[in-house]
Structures are given as C-alpha cells and as structure tokens.
Image (cartoon, rainbow, N blue to C red; front, side, top):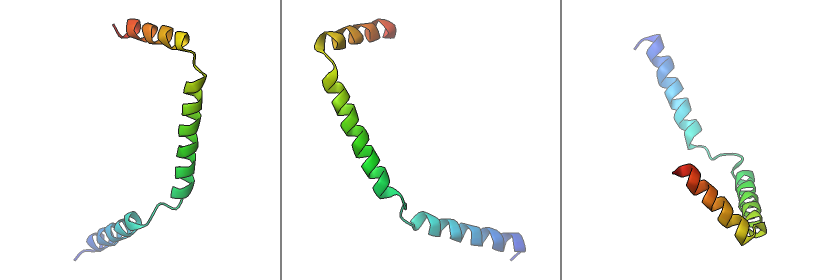
Length: 64
C-alpha cells in the first residue's frame, strides 16, 4: 500500500471518529433555539389583527 493511501485511510478513520462524537455545544444550542421560539411567539402576540391583515394583503400583492 502506498504512502498516500495510508494517509488517506488514516484521515478517513479520523473523520469517522469525529463524526461519531456528540456536538459539544448541543445544550447551549437547544437553549438558544428555545429562547428564539419564545421571542418569536411573543412578537406574534404584539401584532394587532388589522396590522396583520394589511401586511398579508401587501404580501399577496407582491406575490402576484
């Protein structure tokens, strides 16, 4: 087996090991995504119905 082939095989093995490891910041990411969802939900509560309808109508005109 050539030297390049050994190097590539080792690199492939290293990549597979790296892919098998858990994401080290997963907890923080989940917390931030939860916070983002809460903020988006809160922002939707602040919209008045008349403002939402006019925004929807404007979007429909742009889409046409």
